[in-house]
Length: 217
Image (cartoon, rainbow, N blue to C red; front, side, top):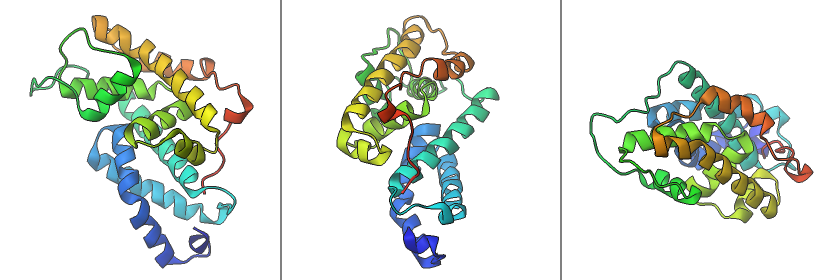
């Protein structure tokens, strides 16, 4: 990244090659669409390049990259949900069960649907529930459950301690359960607007160690 900061175009191309697949996969889990994830990844890399002069060598690049990715995906989801493009009704396939990553997340929250849901419905409601988390909780969940990273690796990426990551994930599970339980029990759709409003109020990250993400490195 230091070479990129000094306008080395070849170094930037190498950076894109190194992180693109991982970034696209992460974004796909955040927005639920591969094509959109690829478009958003390009936007993330564009922001990285435009901000290259502000890169601090004492910061961790992955932290910066994933923070930018989280912001870009959050904006995309917020825009789409407000246009009501996400349907929580069963899709035409009528298939049951849920994709592996969604099943993993549901298992981590202890939520087992009381009624049969198809894959698309599970995916959409889980994505909506994830969007209700504050940014640190959501990023920690994605890195843990979707990227398979250890507490230590997530802590390094987010510039927090492993204990702070455990706290974030524990609180995220509680918040996800509160959003998912009514839907799986009675079909009550999660309210995005209320969740967004509550993110700041319900944000329990009072620990100064969790108070902010350092710029990406």
